[in-house]
Structure formats: structure tokens, C-alpha cells
Image (cartoon, rainbow, N blue to C red; front, side, top):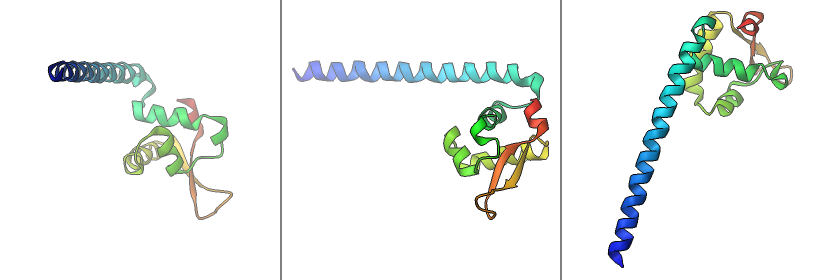
Amino acid sequence: MKQDVDTSDTLRAQLMNRLAFRLYQCANLLNKTGTKALESHGVTTQQWAIIGALVRERWAEGIAVQQLAALLMVSRQNLAGVLSRMEDRGLIERVKSQADSRSRLIRLTPKGWSR
């Protein structure tokens, strides 16, 4: 009986390993395909994801960095560099929140909308 359980656990672990590996391969393929598709737009896949979030009507006036990070499931630290590069290129701007003037929101510029 113990041997059957051990065999079952081993088979389950092997299946999980194969599944994880295939998901990894799929993610790499999607990233490569996405990168090639976005070359003509002059943006990276990370920048495209940010643009995709910012075009939503509910964030037309902007979104807080913390909310954007949660939406994209990335850390604020990882997002900061990408946002700085996008701001340098004129794709986004940081504006004062109407609700709290101490707070800054991220929103697309007209150039960002054209991407």
C-alpha cells in the first residue's frame, strides 16, 4: 500500500513538473511573439501592458502607481523604471490627483494614446 502511495506521489510530481515547464515555454513564446509584434509601435511588452491599463475609461484622469502595480501584478519598484522611461519618451505624465493634491496619478499623454 505504501509503495502505491509513493508511486502516485512520484507520478503527480512528474506531471506537475512537466506542466510547469510547458507553461514556462508558453510564456516565453508569448513574450517573444509579443515583442516582435510591438516593434513597429516602438514599445516593449511591459509598456504595452501599462498603455493597455491606462486606456480604460475609468482611469482617463489617471491611476495611482500603487493601483497600477496591483492591476499589473508587479511591484512598485519594477514599475518605477518603466514609468520613468515612458515619461521620458512623452508617453505618460504624472498629474496631481484632484482628490488629494499631495498624490500623483499616471495617465497617458496624447502621444501615448497614439501608440
